[in-house]
Length: 356
DNA sequence: TAGGCCATCTGGTCCT
DNA sequence: AGGACCAGATGGCCTA
Image (cartoon, rainbow, N blue to C red):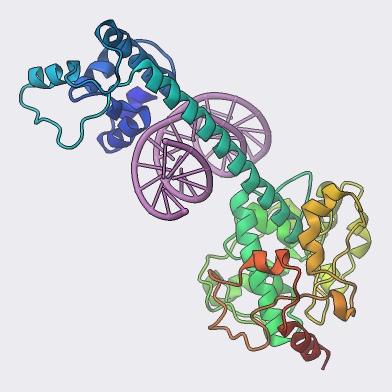
């Protein structure tokens, strides 16, 4: 691997950074590269180099702040290469190496925790976007894309107060998604793939372009629906196989609703949306703190259809939200909508709007 | 087997 | 100094 990278000059600086060679003094890098025959990974390699160096240092000194060191000599023998400016690197004594190792270990642990938290949040996000499945998770990037599209679609529904047609709804959800994910989403929404494909290809040269709400701000290339999942009737297969739920069905009472109770599905469903624009959640009533912890935000925007007290709140974009005000890349702060218990003052107005 | 996805390690940067 | 965040690198796993 390193050999391959070394042969690519464009990659070399990063490789040097990654390998920690900047820890070595001038001119040492190439020596290490050439002479280091062991097959340890980068961290171990650098540590080994540091250890061997400090062993020689320990012979005559015990203070890590001592002045002249061997590195100066090596600089002198280097010849044509200019001396390094700036503060000299402090020598790596055994104590400093140990401290550095400990810092690195702690930093790694923190980074792991951070990434686990991030993944946990992503899992929570997967549960509230359409097509949630425990058995076949959406990838991270697809989850984010779908969530963005979902927010956009919901905001458009709220803005217009009208029920979008199925094709437009799916088009919105699938914008920018990979073809497999598009297929899955479309399958979840029980869309006839041939109709979808035909309509898409007729629209704006294959790009998303029309519908009951505008897609003009989305220049994404449309994804084709050609997999078996998307063949007519394949949605049922998808539901049976993967336990997907259909957000559109729950939204608008499609025929696939009975399959909501797929045995493979155990978690809360993606939040369906009532026709009046409010969320309604088919929450599975778990009272366990674990579930509450994981899904509590889902309940915040959930509610029984028609229940004013449980409908969506903190909808900052409201009825005044215009197309120009809601951009695909900077929609409302999602966590605000989920995590805040306070009900936004705009809620009553919104609800009244949709009940008019 | 190639490519996608993911977890992890790592060093750099910014902030407190 | 230390923590948070980020991006690059790497290797493992899985699937078409």
